[in-house]
Image (cartoon, rainbow, N blue to C red):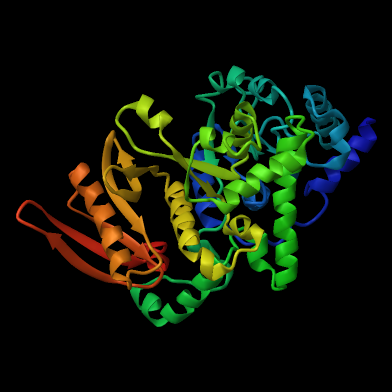
Length: 438
């Protein structure tokens, strides 16, 4: 690509000669970036595509312009630009940098800000960024849709030169803000409780991706989300890892979507005679790299035992779980559990499941000690269900010497004590929608 043509591409994506687009602020992330910027390190935003990483970069550019940073000192590069596909390599980075400096002539006496969006497809991009680290007054903002955004070769070298943020789809708190419902005080919470519950029904009915939550047309929402799923499978996995049998890849993804929150093992999947052992392991690693699925392990103080136990799979978004057209009413207990798992990940918790004599959905590890136990159930109206959930929770609490923790339900709330002559436990039952706002 000639330099003049390359500049036209850059000019299209940058704000050198046009106004910024209006967007909803994801305050949790923009405020975190504001704190991290003070360390003068490079900032990396990771997570699944369409979680608005690029939008967050746009919000940061807006802040810089409002703080009187010269527009010529800001460069934004979108590596999803179709005209770049022919040459996604370090040579392209060099050409972009030369073109930017030639046409914009940035002020090198002041800091320059470089935004590299969806850079994971350029091999060894870290090498290019690293060469600017100590010799130039430049701060990089980098996004990618792969957990392997940093290669093994450069991750150690860059370890002390970047700060990382995981950008999740919308939390329930953010979802309420997107729907113009603000909860600032306890009185707000009380007065708006009915509206909160109503919006929770919408939230759990799949719409976690920011753009989707702003759409009104249900058909368009579904088309967009189907497109997201296909893009992850085809572009982020099949194309990147040269997988030709896309149907086979989708088939395993659908298996996990229809069995999310359930126990699985690679050996068990192998016995279905649909995929080879190595293929299953490879595909699972790809799903995890792109944040499509997460794997939850059984807790054990022995790492070896932990690795050989069965795992559970959770999806990043409930719409993907419902791709197979299950009825919402049939799926809701699994949706609740999946939702709680993602929220715990968002809160940066180290999560496992517990299974000894009984099973508990989630236990939280902090400083090599289990500190919390959580069960998730749609409701506790059935005596057998209530006994099973309480027994699993108590089993975890006894195992890890906990005195108190919670059962999360769709809309029930109570507090009670379970005891005998040997032990006494306090259990709180909390609606998931309320717990999400704590």
